[in-house]
Image (cartoon, rainbow, N blue to C red):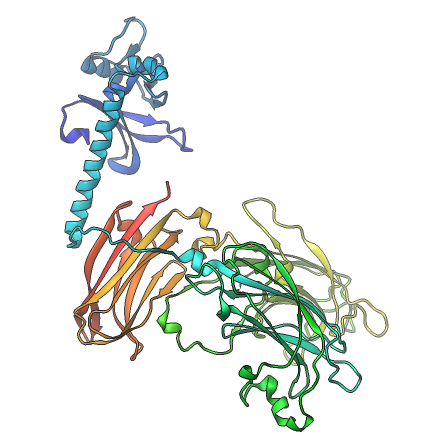
Length: 629
């Protein structure tokens, strides 16, 4: 700062008009030998980030033509606009202290050294321009170096050269997806007595499984369902281990009948490709090397009915596949697989995880119209139960109050839920007639809306319009046996994905910066043991490979994360594989890191044992946080 090295000629109360800010900033103008400095200040409290410095050599023109204002025009064309109760003292101080040229004593206009620089800027031959740029760069570099060394001393770290390591982009790793659309099947086997089947398809990929809905009484089912699977990390193209298997079954009450099997070979498919491929695959028996075990429920019936012999399998399955991203539109409605078969070697590779992209589900129950009368008086006593049904059948319920004797009730109630991509949940509105505490309430009708069909609301604009929906009974009819309509329900429901995006990295284009974490090695652990490392920041998790029986395990892995909230911490934990417990951890708040500087140290790992904190070893790691420019 100039005040630390230079003589101060004067200080004046004023207001700074920042062109990028909504409101002016109160503060003080200080005049030094080679620069002027405005510092934000309210009642003696300094305002961080509200300072503006102009060097003498850059001052082109100084204007105080109004008694209340002072404008400093710089050589680069930018201006510093200040307001005073009286600008004359500040103007006179600047002119006198800096020996500025004032052509007319009656006019408060003066010129400075930047005037000539401004004139010569257009032809690229400004005197000393290159030298000044070099000098400014050198000063900036020296300040950064001094700040870096000071921070290292505070952390107890030693400056070390950064190792050459490949960078793993964690957002990219968790976002890459394989999409598989099961379109339809043709001419499948008839497994039921009526000459038809009730087909469904199991889609399997790397130990994960997704299942289509069941289409009843047909040999030509059409599913048109999309499923998504995570692509293994660190792959450029898929190989023979990335085959997708399709098992087609006939749905039965107890045990399902096997209809056919086929496999989609993805060898050579580029992970970053965008091409969509549609294939028609012929159904056949299971390969001899893939015979299921006896406890595979879907194939159990085959095992029990071995005397029937091997059937001649017919039919085809039409599928489509492509590589994409968890932020793609298709991901909103894609089916999520469940774990069918754990991978015993998963601990040998690095794995990344991310919290699901969540959205605020806002529901407004406005009114009812022509609600059927189930009571003996003037009308039903209707209320609405709003239910969010998860794919596993779990229900989250909220409800309105009831209104006495109403055929056109108005509730005007708003409810909030949390939904996560893919949006496979369902929203149900059940309208009941309230019958008191001594009787069960009668269901009048309901409205079902898949979450994936709701509109997205972005920004601060108008929310989607309310809509009227017809109430239906369990059979899908809109009237009772006598033909009386159940009525209509006016509701508004929509998704707001921006509400939680700072928590889950839903839109990384809005990231404020990126964090690079180097996990290098464990040092002087108490005893040789099986270990692994977990790195957590924001919505991202990274599990590093297992290291067996080593007191100095080495990983040498570099991870990069987008950062939405610089106030978030990054935590690196070292875990015991056999005990499943944490050995120790490092926790760093990102906002404490200097921009662009790498902090490396042998960080002590501390754990609480009883009432005593003990050091159980060290973990060599580094952290670099760089703001988005």
